[in-house]
Amino acid sequence: MAPISAIITPILINFLHNVFTALWIGGMLTLAFTVLPAMRKVLGKSKETQALNSMIKKKLSLLTYISIIGLIITGLFMSNMAVLSGLSTGFLSFGNEYSTLMSIKHLLYFVMIFLSLFRSQIVDRVKKFTPEQKQKLNMLTLLLNILAGLSVLFLSSYVSVLAALPTP
Image 1 (cartoon, rainbow, N blue to C red):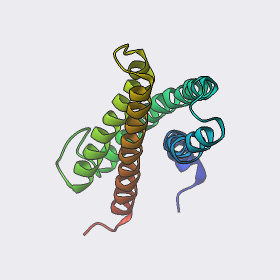
Image 2 (cartoon, rainbow, N blue to C red):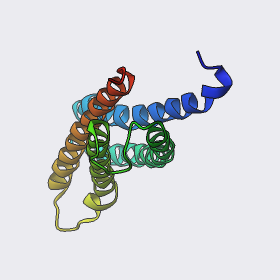
Image 3 (cartoon, one colour):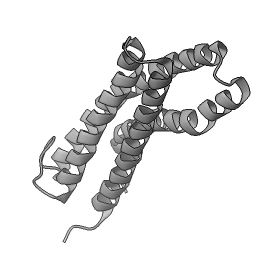
């Protein structure tokens, strides 16, 4: 067994990566399946609902941006460790099963970033959309991002198991 001093950095990087993932995907799940339905049930479609929704969206967007930055930083360290260990053939490469799965995960991650930015920065600014259209587009974008996020979590689990398997 390796001494703690030799593995503490990878442990902390992995821990932070998991925290940022939990904040982002957990925030989306909580918003979509708890906060928004409860808010609509209690407040209806009032101006207060729109104001509260806007405030929640703004605060969650900040957590999302922090998570995106944190995931990029920790992901770069983790990718480097995977390449150095021989698990991966490089960023967005398809040289082996591990690299292919990680590449698909990273592409989905880019989709998640796009969807988050689209939802937080563009949808509400498009003047052609009615409030109802904006609400539907926001919800659709959120649900698509949740699906992408759950796919990323599945792929993360998959590659974790692959990395732990004994090499033939």
